Length: 302
Image (spheres, rainbow, N blue to C red):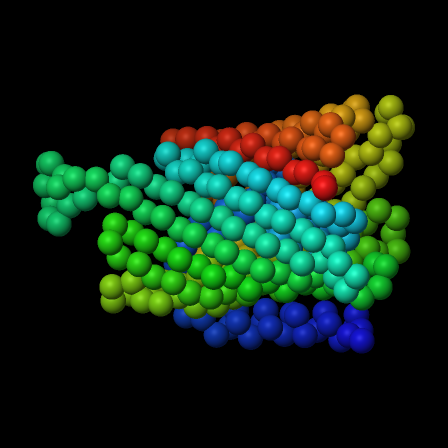
């Protein structure tokens, strides 16, 4: 059996090797940075240690190991500048671990097409991104889990296409301090074919963070505090922070903040739980007149 003291060094050795083997430069396939779930968006995307539902497959593949029953998650996102993003994920606990299936589709329509600089475009074109992934997460003991995901990626811009493969690795650990989880993940480690003459660099993302559930005296409910440090290799690094509070058994209030990004700051949202259903909403404004993002998610136990 893999031991905790051996697994953590292996994971971070992979992180170190990859982060030092890439030449400087911006990454492509930006839709891979969007993640999934209104809950995660509302708490500033501080989700690597919080990931305890089927949406966590997009943040930390190890989190699904602690899901006690089958679960399906769906998210619709009205992204900035008219971009639409759809996500569905499924978590299936088994006797040997949790199997996950995930898909995401990103659409951008109405792009003006030109061959040279001109007042009138030749017409409109669109761009599409698609992801399909399979994951597996396993608890090594009652406190510690590891996870792995393999993903097929596809991008089409007008008539040009490219495809590729990527993997995610993750771990999640419940510390001896009551209610404190820590987590880490490496996502989008892989490659893409060339589109025309250019090879697309994937946004390999490293997340390390914690999530602490604190008991409160107010209505005998709980307060969650979460924080992540995020590095998109060859691109940007920032902090994500967020919290959620349940004033009623069916209602969750959320808020978050990102520090170190020019385009992001505050976020907010709420969740409503009814029996096996959980409905979540997130509102995320962007700076520089980019607009706002609204996300609606549904998670169902079955």
